[in-house]
Length: 329
Ligand code: CP3
Image 1 (cartoon, protein in one colour):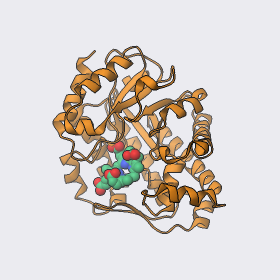
Image 2: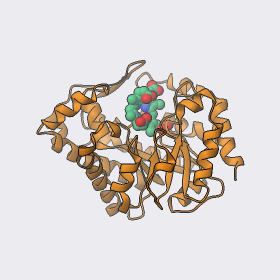
Image 3: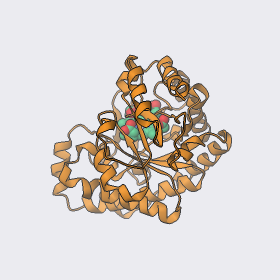
Protein backbone atom coordinates (compact mmCIF):
# COMPACT_ATOMS: atom_id res chain seq x y z
CA UNK A 1 0.00 0.00 0.00
CA UNK A 2 1.62 3.15 -1.28
CA UNK A 3 0.02 5.35 1.39
CA UNK A 4 1.21 3.15 4.24
CA UNK A 5 4.73 3.01 2.79
CA UNK A 6 4.64 6.81 2.57
CA UNK A 7 3.41 7.13 6.17
CA UNK A 8 6.40 4.95 7.07
CA UNK A 9 8.72 7.52 5.48
CA UNK A 10 9.14 6.14 1.97
CA UNK A 11 9.67 8.72 -0.81
CA UNK A 12 7.52 7.39 -3.65
CA UNK A 13 8.25 8.41 -7.20
CA UNK A 14 4.55 8.70 -8.00
CA UNK A 15 2.93 10.18 -4.91
CA UNK A 16 -0.15 8.53 -3.42
CA UNK A 17 -3.38 10.53 -3.66
CA UNK A 18 -6.81 10.59 -2.00
CA UNK A 19 -9.06 13.54 -1.27
CA UNK A 20 -10.82 14.63 1.87
CA UNK A 21 -14.59 14.14 1.71
CA UNK A 22 -14.10 12.09 -1.47
CA UNK A 23 -17.18 9.99 -0.74
CA UNK A 24 -20.52 11.71 -1.16
CA UNK A 25 -20.76 15.34 -2.07
CA UNK A 26 -19.59 15.56 -5.68
CA UNK A 27 -20.63 12.10 -6.90
CA UNK A 28 -23.94 11.61 -8.77
CA UNK A 29 -23.90 7.90 -7.85
CA UNK A 30 -23.71 8.91 -4.18
CA UNK A 31 -26.71 11.20 -4.52
CA UNK A 32 -28.66 8.29 -6.04
CA UNK A 33 -27.66 5.96 -3.21
CA UNK A 34 -28.34 8.59 -0.56
CA UNK A 35 -31.99 8.86 -1.72
CA UNK A 36 -32.57 5.37 -0.32
CA UNK A 37 -32.27 6.62 3.25
CA UNK A 38 -34.07 9.67 4.59
CA UNK A 39 -31.94 10.00 7.65
CA UNK A 40 -28.17 10.55 7.31
CA UNK A 41 -27.29 8.80 10.57
CA UNK A 42 -29.28 5.72 9.45
CA UNK A 43 -27.32 5.82 6.20
CA UNK A 44 -24.03 5.93 8.15
CA UNK A 45 -25.09 2.80 10.07
CA UNK A 46 -26.29 0.76 7.10
CA UNK A 47 -23.62 -1.76 6.14
CA UNK A 48 -24.46 -2.08 2.44
CA UNK A 49 -24.82 1.62 1.89
CA UNK A 50 -21.58 2.44 3.71
CA UNK A 51 -19.75 -0.24 1.75
CA UNK A 52 -21.04 1.17 -1.53
CA UNK A 53 -20.43 4.86 -0.61
CA UNK A 54 -16.89 4.07 0.57
CA UNK A 55 -15.98 2.22 -2.64
CA UNK A 56 -17.64 4.65 -5.10
CA UNK A 57 -14.75 7.15 -5.24
CA UNK A 58 -12.22 4.32 -5.64
CA UNK A 59 -14.14 2.83 -8.57
CA UNK A 60 -14.42 6.21 -10.24
CA UNK A 61 -11.04 7.82 -9.53
CA UNK A 62 -8.74 4.94 -8.52
CA UNK A 63 -7.46 6.81 -5.45
CA UNK A 64 -4.79 5.14 -3.32
CA UNK A 65 -7.04 5.13 -0.24
CA UNK A 66 -10.68 4.71 0.65
CA UNK A 67 -11.98 6.53 3.73
CA UNK A 68 -14.71 4.77 5.61
CA UNK A 69 -18.04 6.50 5.03
CA UNK A 70 -19.18 7.84 8.38
CA UNK A 71 -19.16 11.18 10.20
CA UNK A 72 -17.29 12.80 13.07
CA UNK A 73 -20.66 13.53 14.73
CA UNK A 74 -21.26 9.81 15.32
CA UNK A 75 -19.50 10.34 18.66
CA UNK A 76 -21.91 12.91 20.14
CA UNK A 77 -24.78 10.90 18.63
CA UNK A 78 -23.75 7.75 20.51
CA UNK A 79 -23.04 9.70 23.67
CA UNK A 80 -26.76 10.40 23.69
CA UNK A 81 -26.90 13.81 21.99
CA UNK A 82 -29.06 12.99 18.99
CA UNK A 83 -27.71 14.31 15.65
CA UNK A 84 -29.71 14.97 12.50
CA UNK A 85 -28.91 16.71 9.23
CA UNK A 86 -31.15 19.17 7.45
CA UNK A 87 -30.54 19.84 3.79
CA UNK A 88 -29.15 23.32 3.25
CA UNK A 89 -28.73 23.80 7.02
CA UNK A 90 -26.17 21.17 8.08
CA UNK A 91 -25.94 19.25 11.33
CA UNK A 92 -28.44 19.79 14.14
CA UNK A 93 -27.71 18.39 17.59
CA UNK A 94 -30.26 18.06 20.39
CA UNK A 95 -29.86 20.19 23.49
CA UNK A 96 -27.07 18.51 25.45
CA UNK A 97 -27.58 16.84 28.80
CA UNK A 98 -24.02 17.38 30.07
CA UNK A 99 -24.29 15.10 33.09
CA UNK A 100 -25.43 12.24 30.89
CA UNK A 101 -22.73 12.97 28.28
CA UNK A 102 -19.86 13.31 30.74
CA UNK A 103 -20.82 10.36 32.93
CA UNK A 104 -22.26 8.09 30.24
CA UNK A 105 -20.79 5.64 27.77
CA UNK A 106 -20.90 5.21 24.02
CA UNK A 107 -23.95 3.18 22.99
CA UNK A 108 -23.21 -0.33 21.77
CA UNK A 109 -24.89 0.37 18.39
CA UNK A 110 -21.56 1.86 17.35
CA UNK A 111 -20.29 -1.73 16.86
CA UNK A 112 -21.92 -1.84 13.44
CA UNK A 113 -19.27 0.63 12.22
CA UNK A 114 -16.49 -1.78 13.19
CA UNK A 115 -18.23 -4.71 11.48
CA UNK A 116 -18.60 -2.56 8.38
CA UNK A 117 -14.91 -1.68 8.42
CA UNK A 118 -14.10 -5.42 8.39
CA UNK A 119 -16.44 -5.89 5.45
CA UNK A 120 -15.00 -2.94 3.50
CA UNK A 121 -11.44 -4.06 4.17
CA UNK A 122 -12.29 -7.49 2.72
CA UNK A 123 -13.84 -5.96 -0.40
CA UNK A 124 -11.12 -3.40 -1.05
CA UNK A 125 -8.14 -4.37 -3.19
CA UNK A 126 -4.91 -5.06 -1.31
CA UNK A 127 -3.07 -2.08 -2.81
CA UNK A 128 -5.61 0.40 -1.46
CA UNK A 129 -5.40 1.62 2.11
CA UNK A 130 -8.55 1.93 4.20
CA UNK A 131 -8.58 5.05 6.36
CA UNK A 132 -10.59 5.40 9.53
CA UNK A 133 -11.15 8.80 11.13
CA UNK A 134 -12.30 10.68 14.20
CA UNK A 135 -13.08 14.31 14.98
CA UNK A 136 -10.87 15.86 17.66
CA UNK A 137 -12.26 17.16 20.98
CA UNK A 138 -12.33 20.90 20.23
CA UNK A 139 -14.13 20.43 16.89
CA UNK A 140 -16.64 17.99 18.38
CA UNK A 141 -17.22 20.20 21.43
CA UNK A 142 -17.88 23.21 19.22
CA UNK A 143 -20.72 21.31 17.48
CA UNK A 144 -22.02 19.87 20.76
CA UNK A 145 -22.15 23.14 22.70
CA UNK A 146 -23.91 25.14 19.98
CA UNK A 147 -26.22 22.33 18.81
CA UNK A 148 -24.53 22.13 15.42
CA UNK A 149 -23.91 25.81 14.68
CA UNK A 150 -20.28 26.78 14.23
CA UNK A 151 -20.72 30.42 13.27
CA UNK A 152 -19.82 32.38 16.40
CA UNK A 153 -16.45 31.31 17.77
CA UNK A 154 -15.73 34.48 19.84
CA UNK A 155 -18.93 33.79 21.79
CA UNK A 156 -18.08 30.08 22.14
CA UNK A 157 -14.58 30.89 23.38
CA UNK A 158 -15.72 33.36 26.02
CA UNK A 159 -18.33 30.81 27.15
CA UNK A 160 -15.94 27.87 27.56
CA UNK A 161 -13.31 29.98 29.32
CA UNK A 162 -15.76 30.39 32.19
CA UNK A 163 -17.49 27.03 32.05
CA UNK A 164 -16.28 24.64 34.77
CA UNK A 165 -17.54 21.55 32.87
CA UNK A 166 -15.41 22.23 29.79
CA UNK A 167 -12.34 20.39 31.00
CA UNK A 168 -14.49 17.38 31.92
CA UNK A 169 -16.09 17.42 28.49
CA UNK A 170 -12.71 17.54 26.73
CA UNK A 171 -11.43 14.67 28.91
CA UNK A 172 -14.52 12.58 28.16
CA UNK A 173 -14.09 13.22 24.45
CA UNK A 174 -10.40 12.25 24.61
CA UNK A 175 -11.44 8.92 26.11
CA UNK A 176 -14.23 8.03 23.67
CA UNK A 177 -12.37 9.34 20.59
CA UNK A 178 -9.32 7.22 21.50
CA UNK A 179 -11.52 4.13 21.90
CA UNK A 180 -13.23 4.81 18.57
CA UNK A 181 -9.89 5.23 16.77
CA UNK A 182 -8.45 2.05 18.30
CA UNK A 183 -11.55 0.02 17.42
CA UNK A 184 -11.39 1.20 13.79
CA UNK A 185 -7.72 0.21 13.52
CA UNK A 186 -8.39 -3.17 15.12
CA UNK A 187 -11.22 -3.78 12.66
CA UNK A 188 -8.99 -3.31 9.63
CA UNK A 189 -8.46 0.41 9.05
CA UNK A 190 -4.83 0.80 7.95
CA UNK A 191 -4.42 4.34 9.26
CA UNK A 192 -6.49 6.91 11.11
CA UNK A 193 -6.96 10.60 10.41
CA UNK A 194 -7.68 12.99 13.28
CA UNK A 195 -9.81 15.92 12.05
CA UNK A 196 -9.44 19.17 14.02
CA UNK A 197 -11.36 21.17 11.44
CA UNK A 198 -12.03 24.23 13.63
CA UNK A 199 -8.51 24.44 15.09
CA UNK A 200 -7.79 27.92 13.74
CA UNK A 201 -10.61 29.41 15.83
CA UNK A 202 -8.65 28.70 19.01
CA UNK A 203 -6.56 31.69 20.22
CA UNK A 204 -2.79 30.97 20.27
CA UNK A 205 -2.58 30.99 24.08
CA UNK A 206 -5.22 28.23 24.35
CA UNK A 207 -3.93 25.94 21.61
CA UNK A 208 -1.80 23.83 23.93
CA UNK A 209 -4.64 23.26 26.38
CA UNK A 210 -7.55 22.82 23.98
CA UNK A 211 -5.87 21.32 20.92
CA UNK A 212 -2.41 19.84 21.44
CA UNK A 213 -2.64 18.33 24.95
CA UNK A 214 -5.87 16.46 24.05
CA UNK A 215 -4.38 15.37 20.68
CA UNK A 216 -1.25 14.12 22.45
CA UNK A 217 -3.35 12.06 24.85
CA UNK A 218 -5.36 10.54 21.98
CA UNK A 219 -2.22 9.70 20.00
CA UNK A 220 -0.59 8.15 23.08
CA UNK A 221 -3.62 6.01 23.91
CA UNK A 222 -3.79 4.76 20.33
CA UNK A 223 -0.08 3.90 20.43
CA UNK A 224 -0.42 2.20 23.82
CA UNK A 225 -2.95 -0.13 22.24
CA UNK A 226 -1.35 -0.39 18.79
CA UNK A 227 2.33 0.62 18.88
CA UNK A 228 2.83 1.01 15.12
CA UNK A 229 -0.51 2.74 14.39
CA UNK A 230 -0.33 5.14 11.45
CA UNK A 231 -1.86 8.50 12.36
CA UNK A 232 -2.49 11.67 10.32
CA UNK A 233 -3.21 14.83 12.32
CA UNK A 234 -5.18 17.40 10.33
CA UNK A 235 -5.43 20.73 12.15
CA UNK A 236 -7.01 23.08 9.68
CA UNK A 237 -5.11 26.39 9.48
CA UNK A 238 -2.55 25.55 12.20
CA UNK A 239 -0.22 22.97 10.65
CA UNK A 240 2.98 24.82 11.55
CA UNK A 241 2.04 25.04 15.26
CA UNK A 242 0.89 21.41 15.26
CA UNK A 243 4.17 20.24 13.73
CA UNK A 244 6.08 21.90 16.57
CA UNK A 245 3.72 20.77 19.35
CA UNK A 246 3.35 17.14 18.19
CA UNK A 247 6.88 16.81 16.82
CA UNK A 248 7.93 13.82 18.93
CA UNK A 249 4.85 11.69 18.30
CA UNK A 250 5.73 10.28 14.88
CA UNK A 251 2.53 11.32 13.13
CA UNK A 252 1.89 12.70 9.65
CA UNK A 253 0.46 16.20 9.25
CA UNK A 254 -2.39 17.31 7.00
CA UNK A 255 -1.81 20.81 5.63
CA UNK A 256 -4.69 23.09 4.64
CA UNK A 257 -4.51 25.35 1.59
CA UNK A 258 -4.09 28.56 3.61
CA UNK A 259 -0.62 27.36 4.66
CA UNK A 260 2.32 27.81 2.26
CA UNK A 261 4.29 24.55 2.16
CA UNK A 262 7.52 26.53 1.88
CA UNK A 263 6.82 28.32 5.20
CA UNK A 264 6.48 25.12 7.24
CA UNK A 265 9.12 24.22 9.83
CA UNK A 266 11.66 21.62 8.71
CA UNK A 267 10.40 18.09 9.31
CA UNK A 268 11.07 14.46 8.48
CA UNK A 269 7.41 13.65 9.08
CA UNK A 270 5.13 12.70 6.23
CA UNK A 271 2.98 15.62 5.04
CA UNK A 272 -0.38 15.58 3.28
CA UNK A 273 -2.19 18.22 1.25
CA UNK A 274 -2.74 20.90 0.17
CA UNK A 275 -4.43 21.90 -3.08
CA UNK A 276 -7.10 24.59 -2.65
CA UNK A 277 -10.59 23.02 -3.06
CA UNK A 278 -11.81 26.24 -4.70
CA UNK A 279 -9.15 25.92 -7.38
CA UNK A 280 -10.12 22.31 -8.03
CA UNK A 281 -13.70 23.53 -8.41
CA UNK A 282 -12.78 26.40 -10.75
CA UNK A 283 -10.29 24.47 -12.86
CA UNK A 284 -7.19 26.65 -12.35
CA UNK A 285 -5.19 24.09 -10.36
CA UNK A 286 -2.46 22.82 -12.70
CA UNK A 287 0.32 25.13 -11.55
CA UNK A 288 -0.45 24.50 -7.88
CA UNK A 289 -0.30 20.72 -8.43
CA UNK A 290 3.12 21.12 -10.08
CA UNK A 291 4.30 23.24 -7.15
CA UNK A 292 3.11 20.61 -4.66
CA UNK A 293 4.90 17.87 -6.63
CA UNK A 294 8.08 19.95 -6.89
CA UNK A 295 8.04 20.65 -3.13
CA UNK A 296 7.45 16.99 -2.30
CA UNK A 297 9.72 15.24 -4.80
CA UNK A 298 12.29 14.26 -2.14
CA UNK A 299 9.85 13.84 0.76
CA UNK A 300 7.29 11.34 2.06
CA UNK A 301 4.12 13.10 0.90
CA UNK A 302 0.46 12.25 0.26
CA UNK A 303 -1.27 14.45 -2.31
CA UNK A 304 -4.67 15.70 -1.18
CA UNK A 305 -6.79 18.84 -1.01
CA UNK A 306 -6.29 21.32 1.81
CA UNK A 307 -9.86 20.75 2.97
CA UNK A 308 -12.90 18.77 1.80
CA UNK A 309 -13.89 18.70 -1.85
CA UNK A 310 -16.66 21.20 -2.68
CA UNK A 311 -19.98 19.65 -3.74
CA UNK A 312 -20.13 21.29 -7.22
CA UNK A 313 -16.62 20.23 -8.28
CA UNK A 314 -16.77 18.80 -11.83
CA UNK A 315 -15.82 15.12 -12.00
CA UNK A 316 -13.45 15.93 -14.88
CA UNK A 317 -11.39 18.21 -12.62
CA UNK A 318 -10.85 15.41 -10.11
CA UNK A 319 -9.82 13.05 -12.94
CA UNK A 320 -7.37 15.65 -14.25
CA UNK A 321 -5.93 16.15 -10.73
CA UNK A 322 -5.27 12.40 -10.40
CA UNK A 323 -3.77 12.27 -13.90
CA UNK A 324 -1.36 15.14 -13.20
CA UNK A 325 -0.07 13.37 -10.10
CA UNK A 326 0.25 9.95 -11.78
CA UNK A 327 1.88 11.32 -14.95
CA UNK A 328 4.48 13.20 -12.97
CA UNK A 329 6.35 10.12 -11.80
O1 CP3 B 1 -15.60 11.03 2.07
C1 CP3 B 1 -15.30 11.11 3.25
O2 CP3 B 1 -14.43 11.89 3.66
C2 CP3 B 1 -15.92 10.13 4.23
C3 CP3 B 1 -17.00 10.57 4.98
C4 CP3 B 1 -17.02 11.85 5.82
C5 CP3 B 1 -18.22 12.59 6.00
N1 CP3 B 1 -17.97 13.54 6.96
C6 CP3 B 1 -19.49 12.30 5.30
C7 CP3 B 1 -20.54 13.33 5.25
C8 CP3 B 1 -16.04 12.45 6.63
C9 CP3 B 1 -14.55 12.12 6.77
C10 CP3 B 1 -16.66 13.52 7.34
C11 CP3 B 1 -15.95 14.35 8.33
C12 CP3 B 1 -16.61 15.54 8.88
N2 CP3 B 1 -17.94 15.72 9.19
C13 CP3 B 1 -15.92 16.72 9.28
C14 CP3 B 1 -14.42 16.92 9.23
C15 CP3 B 1 -13.92 17.22 7.88
C16 CP3 B 1 -14.14 18.64 7.40
O3 CP3 B 1 -14.74 18.77 6.33
O4 CP3 B 1 -13.65 19.56 8.06
C17 CP3 B 1 -16.88 17.63 9.77
C18 CP3 B 1 -16.61 19.03 10.29
C19 CP3 B 1 -18.17 16.98 9.71
C20 CP3 B 1 -19.47 17.50 10.19
C21 CP3 B 1 -20.49 17.52 9.11
N3 CP3 B 1 -21.08 16.38 8.56
C22 CP3 B 1 -21.09 18.66 8.46
C23 CP3 B 1 -20.73 20.09 8.77
C24 CP3 B 1 -22.01 18.18 7.52
C25 CP3 B 1 -22.99 18.97 6.65
C26 CP3 B 1 -22.62 19.32 5.31
C27 CP3 B 1 -21.37 18.76 4.64
O5 CP3 B 1 -21.44 17.97 3.70
O6 CP3 B 1 -20.26 19.15 5.07
C28 CP3 B 1 -21.96 16.76 7.56
C29 CP3 B 1 -22.76 15.81 6.75
C30 CP3 B 1 -22.03 14.87 5.87
N4 CP3 B 1 -20.98 14.11 6.28
C31 CP3 B 1 -22.32 14.59 4.51
C32 CP3 B 1 -21.39 13.61 4.11
C33 CP3 B 1 -21.30 12.95 2.76
C34 CP3 B 1 -23.47 15.19 3.69
C35 CP3 B 1 -24.81 14.71 4.17
C36 CP3 B 1 -25.71 14.08 3.15
O7 CP3 B 1 -25.27 13.46 2.17
O8 CP3 B 1 -26.92 14.14 3.40
